[in-house]
Image 1: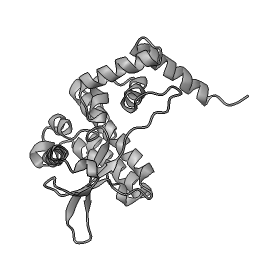
Image 2 (image 1 turned 180 degrees about the horizontal axis):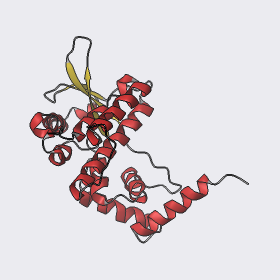
Image 3 (image 1 turned 120 degrees about the vertical axis):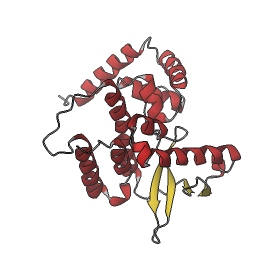
Image 4 (image 1 turned 90 degrees about the vertical axis):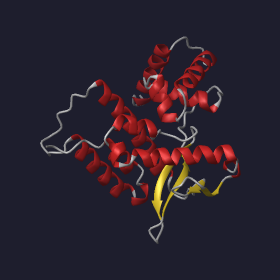
Length: 232
């Protein structure tokens, strides 16, 4: 019997940025190979509808890991969290009971996704382990010198620069929508609800003078093509 594919292992590897860029890339590549080509016979992958959702979720985490890697130099975490989800050190805004309860639930959901039982159902596991906490932080596991496990909350918001001023969340939603992502995948990447994404998308499109998501994708494609053309 072949080994069961383990997409959660790719997500775990995506956040091992403490290894440094070269080692991080090797480990991530190994995790992807072990999941998509466990027999080493070459990837022959015709994903089902469910598998497409799973690997779209995985891609959101890999993207978050890349952003963390780019920002890692000199950045300190916004909070240190115990495996139980207790905030041991962090920003004042995380000191409220509501914030601490939300962090505790997020950490427990991640730990549940990483159990043997969780890995047996990757779709459910990745639904538990969302791309960002509160649309702002990646939750990253670490170990100290004594082997004590803890989590870091690392600020990791997607960046989107537009010429017209827009609220931050509208900019982020427009950025992901311009890449062709549906609302469910944008919500997963930002750690929010699809209905919230839809509201931000509608308001954002109106503010930049576009009528539809299709028009946004077309304009973004034209802008990327123009930016890629060499100066004459």
